[in-house]
Length: 202
Image (cartoon, rainbow, N blue to C red; front, side, top):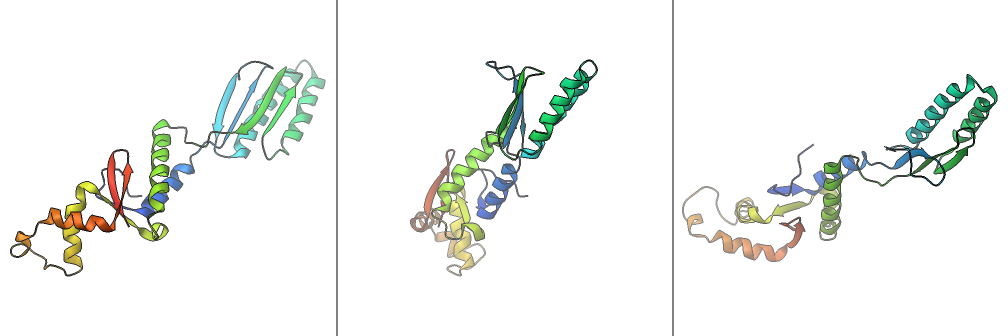
């Protein structure tokens, strides 16, 4: 995937969409843990999928059942019966296991990647995309976002591409004030801020 940065000269909206999707696939959508009543959790682990979160609780309970079963077979059977009920869960749940004096639970997570850098990137890209999308009818089909620092060069290239001036160096291109050309072209674009960098879209 093409690297996306606020320092890119030109960004394709489809690359932004793809990167957001990639980061969202890493989001911690569920958390699982256990704790004594009235106390902070002894353990909390984040998961992308509900099934993985639930399985972590089942694995932990099975380990506890095996341990207790050496001295108390009845208690182990009670835990295993409870595990069968937990296995049917498809959403958040919280169950008390009296044999262990612990609560075991799965809850909705915080919806961000576990890696802090990835989480920061996702926040920035979501904000950037949300603002830019409103000004780009072609957002989902490939809109260009032009970095303000590159806009003069962009204006010159656009003029060549549409045949407004001939390609190559020398007269009359050497007599054109391209900064002025860029400023007038900006009137057709909307500025979007991305963490201190301005991009132009239309």
